[in-house]
Length: 241
Ligand SMILES: [Zn+2]
Ligand SMILES: [Zn+2]
Image 1: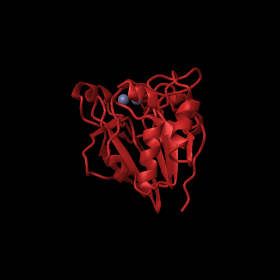
Image 2: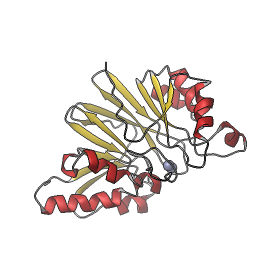
Image 3: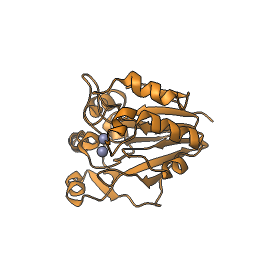
Image 4: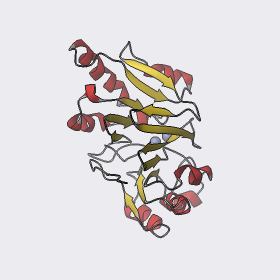
């Protein structure tokens, strides 16, 4: 749905990914601009759940509007069940703000506690960022998708991404910016080094900054791992086993 952070490019959207696995329709992150795209492909009553990787605004701000759509769907009888939502429980004030009447069931994420959403298995793992954050490893039958969420370099990510068919990894910085001491995010080059070490099938770069020359980010990544692309908004990526 959206590939930008920490703010969208003109006409673009911040982080938001719809995972379809059998009957399961899971939205992962819900940043600015995601909702109008989501509703172009899926009515709110068909959503199985929402995972928010962390509570920075570029990953949650359309979530607050999603709650109104749920409320209207309930009034109209289109959706009776509350929508299950998973997010880090810290910062607690931010977490508490996610709750809204009885249209949401809010769950704190705990490391090591896997979710089963239909046949989709979802396992959280902590990242290194300015707020508590969880990346996720998703498995459906034999297909594995790993989402880094926002994180700076962490050697554990190689283990978390191990053998993924698709590694959706943030690439906010250029290598030069990392050299200047910027922290909290990865460069495309670092994402690609992790992808290579983890022997993933494909690397998809996301959380792209509108302030960057994305050709530089992509070229730096491809120098390390050839099977790298920039995520495209609105594109469907199919994992087959
Ligand atoms: Zn972000
Ligand atoms: Zn963030």
